Length: 69
Image (tube, rainbow, N blue to C red):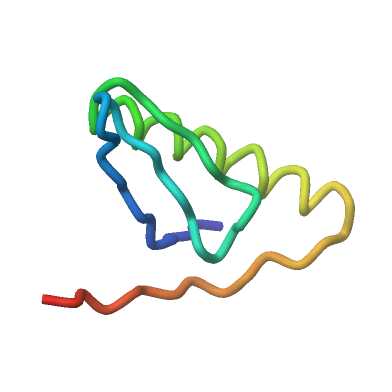
């Protein structure tokens, strides 16, 4: 099964990026570059989904956030 989740990518003042996943609040990760932060987020999402499946917890439906632009 394939999932897609919206992420929030926040540049940090001292460099690097933090990534949050609103649908999976336990996912908070970071990276030195945007690409590394997103790769770390993908790994964290997979780990959280595996944990939720293994423990019979719900997996939220895919939701996309609208841009504020």
